Image 1 (cartoon, rainbow, N blue to C red):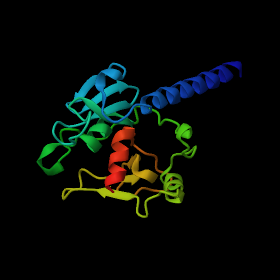
Image 2: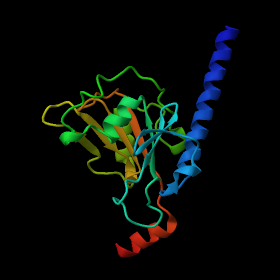
Image 3: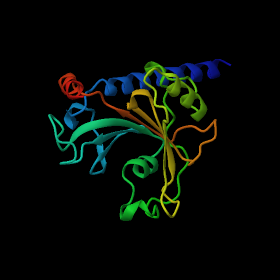
Length: 203
């Protein structure tokens, strides 16, 4: 009984540390140089792995012109249950995304789903709970579901776009069941205040 209590307390500490770590990453702005983040390894030219299921997605050269949006600066922070899913959702194979042969079959979950209580999300991150939460927000999307597939049905997943479009949840099934959990979550970093003001002024 004492051993089980110790394990429970250790798990709680680890979850708390993971929340604090993720919250610290999300405190950065879009366009922050990669060097400002913890050490990472290159997964693809646009994806960097920080470990424990956390990744950085970089701006692609020439795609997003603007202040500080340079090659190697960071656009978003991603959690994914494995390298497989971060590649499948953000760096799928070429040739029209028509084949996932080079990725193989999805592996078992390698990284635990993080708690998002610190950003006000439900305690259980099921498709049903997230859909209800995001649709109920004042700035929620009227149709938050984005489904992606190809002619061969190999690159299939469903995305749920959060209120304000700053959080995107990805599910393995094209039509997720109510209790399905995300295989990946993208947190789009906030824009710099000056960039946001210019965009609001121009409408």
